[in-house]
Amino acid sequence: MARKDPTWFCDLQTLYDTRAYDPEQTIAEERASGMPEDLINQEYLCDFNAANVGSFWGAAVAQLEKRGGLCAFTPSGVDDVFTVFDLGKTDDTAIWWFRPHAGGFDVLDHYASHGEEVSHYFAVLDERAERHGWRYRRFWLPHDARAKTLAARTSVQDQFMSKYPGRVSIVPDMLVRDGIDAGRALLLAPGTRIHARCSEVSGPKDCDGVEALRAYHREWDDEGKCFRQRPVHDWSSHTADGWRYMAVVAKEEGRSSQNRREDAARKPGAIKTRSMADLGTLDELFSECESGGDERRI
Image (cartoon, rainbow, N blue to C red; front, side, top):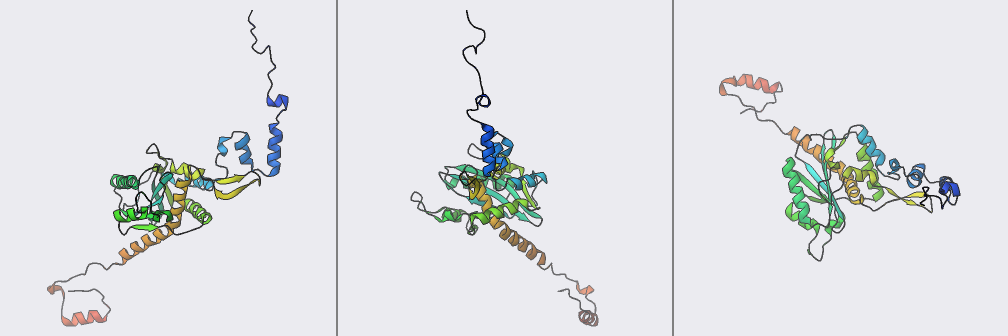
């Protein structure tokens, strides 16, 4: 006769019953050793709201989103669109599109892929420009773009300069720590907007750009019970590195764009003319000149 009680041969007990492993004691020990509470919640209590523990920019992204800076918007123009790259072949390559303007800084789009040739990214650039009507002013590349490969016998920089002559620059050298600070400052700037399309995934190898900024985080030192300053290298790294590069060049391009606007505003207007009938007598003309009239006439 079959027994109805499936537990007749054993006594079901949990870890809390047997105390073979005491999670409360472990958590208490970790807390006493200095582990942050958010990290305890993440590691031991499966609190996925604490998934950005150690994030460099998670709080800044949250602030930008809270003030409405992550949204769909129409840029104030299509000229002076810039791109910045973090490059890799077997590893990820990431692109950010941006446009500085008088009111701040617009981040227009993001794309990432891996294992592709440079021609693939040229096609992406051309497609975005055609779709949105953008006109590129400059393409910013990282330092490793100068390196030549045995296969191509040319550098990425050379290939970009061949396609976009006069519009290719290398990102200024900067410590990672300083770039991270610049990236945070760019997110917190009141005039910064990130277009909602930066969160869209447009291909099988693409990733959510905004989520990558949230995920970019410090490495946890379990022995020292503290966060190391160096970032963890994972799926978010190349998109985040591209953001660091963009933050480094943002001020420079912002100043350049402002100077171009000011130069355009200072250009002299059309020369005003008068007909011979309107010129008046010589005495009237001399009198007007002596009184400080500054119109150029023909």
